[in-house]
Length: 246
Image (cartoon, rainbow, N blue to C red):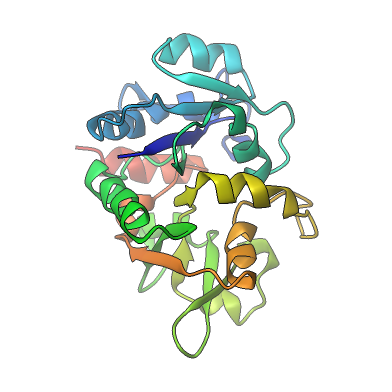
């Protein structure tokens, strides 16, 4: 497979309070949080090493993970688009998968399906979406995810981040886990078009979808179970994850 993985791991984890480690090294059942997704990535047996985007306490992340990975540095926390762009010089594959280091439940088989869809279609962008019945219990972590906005034909028009959603958009139950497979050449040519005209004043990687739609490109969306894309952002999320890890 001509694909390479980029894992976004630069965040502090501010909603987990002041801790002596960056969020991706938060202990989960005695293991660093990021280790779960790295184990699944390893099962893909891709030829090129994953790129880990580091920032906050980057030395600790490098020390924990070792020399098996390439490291890109996000000097400032300016959003997911900014983080992905930091990896540009280290990505040499035709396609690039962008993941978050705080998703311990995503499985190699799902990632393989995403990569194969992208490689078989040759499109510019393939992505997961997850649909929930409600945001109760562990699925409460998904409530703050961006919403998938589709047209009357069922095609994705855009992703609206939760903080930018209207009250109507917040009722949408199809959410964006933020896991994408891009055509690398297209991504780097267009990521510079992302702006930060949003509530957070950050560069959202989600804007790449709207750019693709605006160019008339087809976007492949693959369903994934909500449980597989649970992220860890708060201690409440962490508690739920502790109960779900077997």
